[in-house]
Length: 212
Image (cartoon, rainbow, N blue to C red; front, side):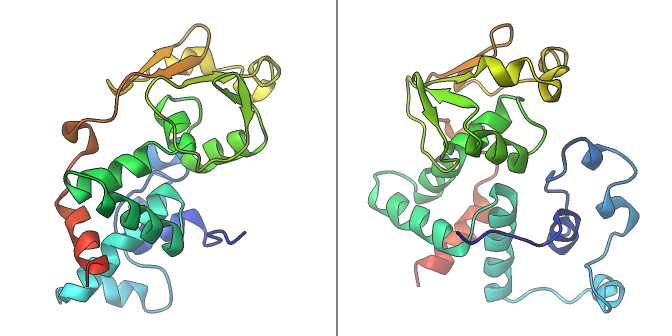
């Protein structure tokens, strides 16, 4: 299966903003976006100094790349999510963002069980989680309202998760799911509301791009 192999810090620098792909490092002075606030490559510094605006196509492409990098998906996956969202009732932008947010790896990240989405994908892919009592190894699995997510006891007791209970005390979780910080279990209460999805205007550029 194809994967994104570009170094994560380069992905953030290319996007021109922090995508929080490396967990705690993104909040320190070691963050590449802080140290080198210009695109990667030999011409990166010169490109960063240019003030020429992007074309309409360039803006649409930029937003697609930003979303793909943030959620760790590829063009084919994003286009599939758009086609499915387009067939649903309601705002296509909201439908698209809900599909991205309801991915299992993203939900695990939102719950604070991992410091990045890539770590969440690894946690799911290695079979350390139970979805409705069944072992799940597909990070892209779409969770539904009422689904319960439980971390298996073996990984709870590992050194990897020894500081998790302390870290969860600082986590502010979205209102669309419930998190039991003691048992390390979560339950989806309802679909993310429009206010939970953030600014949807950039997502509109993606919709315009695929609607051609």
